[in-house]
Length: 540
Image 1 (cartoon, helix red, strand yellow):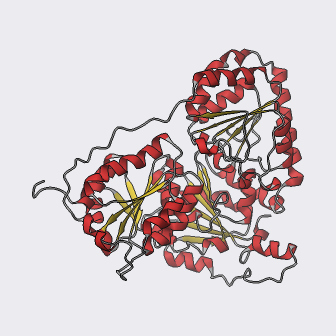
Image 2: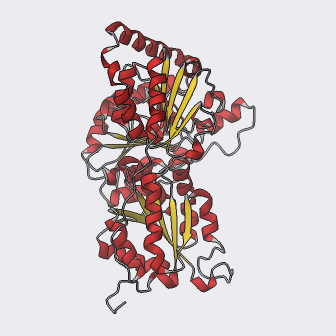
Image 3: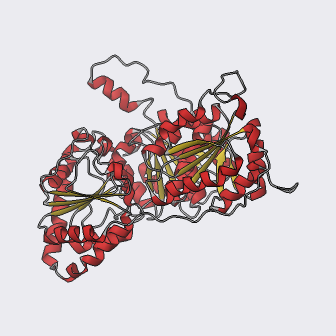
């Protein structure tokens, strides 16, 4: 070590840059000054949200839209606890996120001496919603810990990792190089099992495919397999767009509707790839999904294989490799399906989709025209970020995504509010060439409305569609259905147009749905966000 040795904070940021980090989200503080010296010296773009929870949501949106790791830099204590909700959402939805934080000095860890920003056991808090959480006690070990984090992102189920560095170590000189470790590749499924699966699919008379978010990197292979098998395919909300939802064999993200669940139960072979098959995938049956035929599950996470539905064949492996191998093993089927057979399957899919309509969420008929208008105004690569609101509960299955990584929602799994706007910022920064539309309700929007300032600061032409139903509309309806007096659901809201304009946005109230496409196209060309306030009575 010599006088020119970089500090831990500087070397860490150089290391992250060399792992591919080009943007970091966070709010600086007195405990993270040396980390920020490193961010500046490494030439990494830094985005300052107006709340640390939004830092996590921005990193989440960036990661989902790009497939890269979203990185946060957080202050000790309140920075970490403020971001806990967004980290937990990413954990639930298998989003690759790296959370770098400071923590109190080494000698005082766990002592509860009342130090600034102190949590007696910060690492113990975050270990419950990260793949792992690590306290650095020796700065020379940091490259190893970062390499472990990237092994999670590269070769197993991607989830957040938290690394905290005591403040007395952040500015300590280090003697390690800033080259990344050799990157891993995910494990491949055994060929003899894939051959067995191919034989089962080849001999099936009524097969079906379910795709979850774990198949997000296998869009091309999945579509080839669907075409070879001439079989219906349904996705979870996290997998929207893996198969274009206007594909004649696509059942879209209608996994939650009874006619589709009944079809899957009656299928003789079901291939489920990268999916939880969880309660929030199957709301209509409370998480209960049944299979009378042979169930095959492929997942990177061995612990996931037997959750919610025990398969006849469980395969641990990379979805892209597995589906590509199945495509090659079944390539002889390409010429075996007659035009009539393809028409029959397409008609089956069309009939199933029609039969889902009586089971739609109650507001869907009102919302359908909104989503059709948005769909027609967005190019295929346009990105939707969606918060928990009544309009989105319909959009989860009636918006027709055509590309993977173009529909990002927080409505499943952890199901938090306040996601859509900061996620839209992250997505737009990650994929600046793509138009981005944020869809939020007035209740959830108030969780992160301050991030309009962030979007204005960075001149991001995000279009915000604000569904205003005067409070927590979905919970209000649940109160009414349960005959409970309305408590805490009717909210006094601000004049959103004035607030948005005060932040520097273009803002307007939508009077006619007919005008929305032009408003969106104009918004995509600006150097600032556009907020469009919509009320249920403006959708006619």
